[in-house]
Image (cartoon, rainbow, N blue to C red; front, side, top):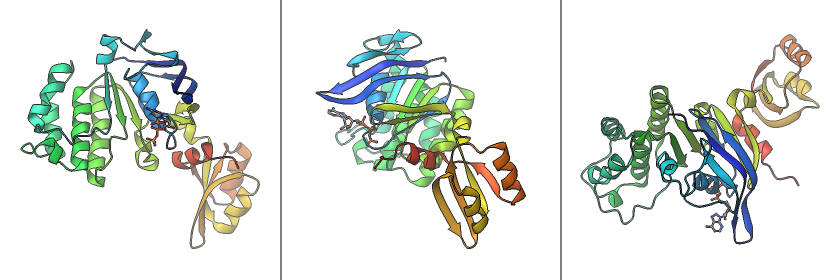
Amino acid sequence: MDAQIKLANVTLKFGKFEALKDLSLLLESNRIHGLIGRNGAGKTSLLSLIAAFRDTTEGQVFIDGEPVFENADKMLQVSFIYNKDYKEEYEKIPQFLEFPEYYRPNYDKEYADYLLKRFKLPLDKPISKLSKGMQSALNAVIGLASRSPITIFDEAYVGMDAPAREIFYQEILADQAKHPRTFILSTHLVSEMDYLFDQVVIIDQGRLVLNEDYETIASRGASITGAADQVDAFVAGLKVLNEQKLGGTKSVMVYGALSEEDQQKAQQLGLEIGPVSLQDLFIHLTEEVH
Ligand SMILES: Nc1ncnc2c1ncn2[C@@H]1O[C@H](COP(=O)(O)OP(=O)(O)OP(=O)(O)O)[C@@H](O)[C@H]1O
């Protein structure tokens, strides 16, 4: 199910306000893309353009080379899952799921039934009466079982407790292995979800900051752990993103790849070198300059 997404010089305005500013981006097919950005960065705006919920002000969004807006075939390939308001949804889950089953060409009812059981969702209550976390789990079921070539989850975990979120993440990985598709996961739970991402997109104030594969990002900085005084001496002069101390041991995140020489020096000092965390990198790359 190949589905490549391309944004070419996309600007989106609400009145005079530019939510997205001349943004160009290529999202490779059959990968899990993590989309992160601070509140108001433009994540939902960007996703709503990919799902053709609205049109761009300038520039264009393409799926497999075709403009997506008002393109019924392409729109059918995209599932955009977000926090819907179910206050007035009086149907029960089985009736409600008849819609995606009819409308989504790859919908797998057996898989949906399995997921409903895994999330322990009640089938006999109106959806409006389900808890917020249960409603989110229902959204996850629809998104996963639809198996759309492009599946977007926009902060779809809201209200789910930790075990439910764990099930959600496990199912994304397991089903992606069996039925690869293009996932976009927009999230604020960066440290909890980073292991899911093949590729990471960071946007800030409507502009693209970074679009790289996870491994490349992890090598953009380093964590250095060891005896506190030795770590301090080692990182002197480096750009420190974050530090944690436990007794005499210290762990420091630095920005910038370490040179061969630095790595050897660290080894001689008995310091442990690891990858930088995406969360620390994200905070650093989107922090306000004072
Ligand atoms: N319909 C709208 N009318 C006017 N401004 C809007 C509209 N939708 C979004 N915006 C503005 O566009 C900017 C980006 O909003 P968007 O919802 O895309 O951000 P986000 O990254 O998803 O934020 P969050 O993480 O808080 O959900 C914000 O400043 C927001 O106020």
